[in-house]
Length: 146
Image (cartoon, rainbow, N blue to C red):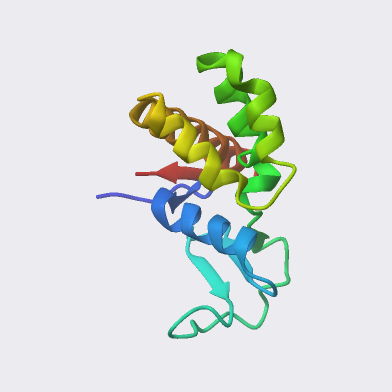
């Protein structure tokens, strides 16, 4: 028989958490929470095709933890510049110029592609994202699952 220990951490699906964090970055008025007991993610946004029912007590931080956007976990510009420092330091000034205008991520992506570093960038971004999400989960008494 399997018994759930009282102090066992709830598991949060990594893909669902990343999607919620992306929603939080890109959508005005979006809200997302993780249930501390079950690991279930609840989201509220006009961008969702089918609105999900959100528990009435979702504001109770003893039961639910608000989901931050990826940028709050330094997975926006900070991540780009970490990659540049590590893999193409000669392009730092050029990339800084990108972020002075709109379309910076598109230009950065084009630069990475032109240098044949797309796979390396994706692996770098994915590894850092997983690490940041895992740390966020641990900080909030949760466990990240695949």
